[in-house]
Length: 426
Image 1: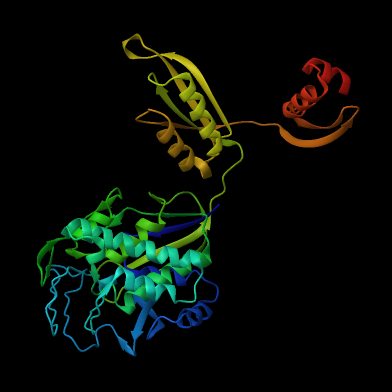
Image 2: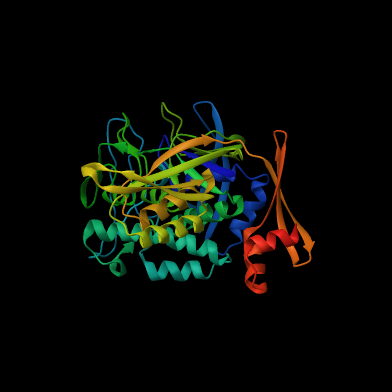
């Protein structure tokens, strides 16, 4: 299984994720040419080397109409999100007042002072629709933006159609989200995992008031995601970074056992006592054929029909075996132990089936090593037609068994019993 693991011990931002993933490619320059040819209005990507705490990595610079973040017309000063001892300060100078809410993104410790644009979600959709990308990548981009818009809607009590993107909607942020979605499509991992996310601490000062860290929209996006706060005062995880992680990461956990083939470091702009980077690791996780997971639950309030239905759904989710055992439960109630055996790569699907199709509130997991015979299927011509035969061997034994489905079909077609079919075909 091809695994992409993201180390978010210094948070996450769009530009840092872009740079880290870019370093995993064998030919990053060719990919940059592709990015710059997508047709994002006025955008050009520039890759530059960066060193943080002695580690060499990549910083991604996005130029919009030739202007980098920090070189624009409107003053927009930020204390860096990783600064110690103080928090963000935002000062926005606009030529007119806006009654709608603005979304803010501080990707990876940039100093932002560029012309601001305000775009609604439908306008973002139009921009994305005109890019030279596959339907899958466009869908990913818009899903990320919807996560941000829905979070702001929840936080501010404003309907999603009335949400307008402030910095997050400018072309540099569109570029970051597009680049990450396209990079993940190119890398094509089977599973994306990430560490718990370091969100920072303290407060953020902005034109709308003083906000806690993580910012309310970021906190909303990261619901159900393991997050933590450390000594660094400031905003370590941006809304864009949070939305990209929430969309793509299937599980937040310590790094699993894997054989790493590539490592990428995506650097923020400033220097701190800790390396200001996102680290991406690409590798393979070998799942031994003899290792199987046993997922079990106890139920005492399901009918026989409901249990039968659930068992079928567990098989459809990828379980190799599903069975029940009668048990006695609390208050002397008769119950059923429902168990599914599966491999790691389908565990999430099987767990989802447990919770969707049974009344259980919890599922137990046990990893079991099994010893199996080598198996193969061969087709044998018989007087009753072709029949599949399973041949198993190993540990000094050999076994043969005709497939039941074939025997059942022949018996039904010929008006015979199973025993008669077995005797005739030998």
